[in-house]
View 1: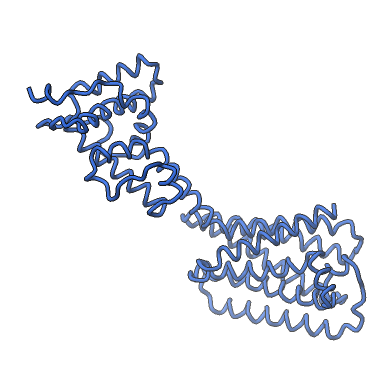
View 2: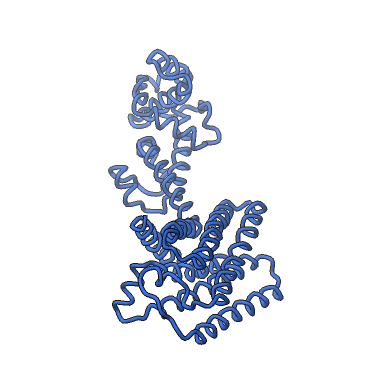
Length: 384
């Protein structure tokens, strides 16, 4: 269990530092995210100094175990105070913020004074490295009470505010932060029991709880990045699926495209000329514009004929409309390429009036199998 605790703790610390570095630039630029980032930074530093491997590395570098424990305790209390300041920021109560700041400063000074009054800082090994810097009961109670107060308020405020806001990213960030604070409450309650009953059997379980708490802090910090990544992935999937239809249509009707298509869709996805969301939006609009232009080349009975052929080919009922559109558009596209003049009256294509992405993706799905299903009009016959 101790080995598992060490591995979970180390993994959570690495994940926390990665999340902090990854989110540093956008978080520090936005006041609404800056408080969360600084709060997680302080908590990450304290959690890092709680890891036995980190403490062993510092002691081998000449740092005293007591010094590591004291710094960890002070940063931990600072983190608890910052949690309180972060969660009450939305209430905009200067008096309460001042009270929290004064209380945090008093707790830090008290820990320093109690540590200085403690003559014997004895103790060695992993258990001592993860214990408070002072053996004084008052020191323990101040340290743990600060954490319990910060985490308890964080659970109540973050969860309550997440129920009132409609911003999805903020909702998940607050709920994950609240869930992490619940585990922190469990950790500090168990840690208080461990201090008064110092048998080492409980410490590995507490370390695992603190590690999972770290992962939840990572998740709360990375919610905006995860959302942006999911949106980019959705946009790239749209680009990938729409590309064959878009490529063929803008080749036939080049005036609707802002830029010439690349040779393969792999190039379009791996080396996009625009951000993924803009690229998908542009291709959707250009495909729709091309369909509107091609309506002047659609034969009056093309949709119905393609629909019958698709049904005879065994196309599923939910895809018959898309298959019929793909067949009619494919015939119109080939008419443009061979030089057939447009009709004086356009033939509206059912379902593409508003150019929804779902409709276009449905046509793109059936495009390879239906694009050549209808014979193309000859240029000479159209002139008769």
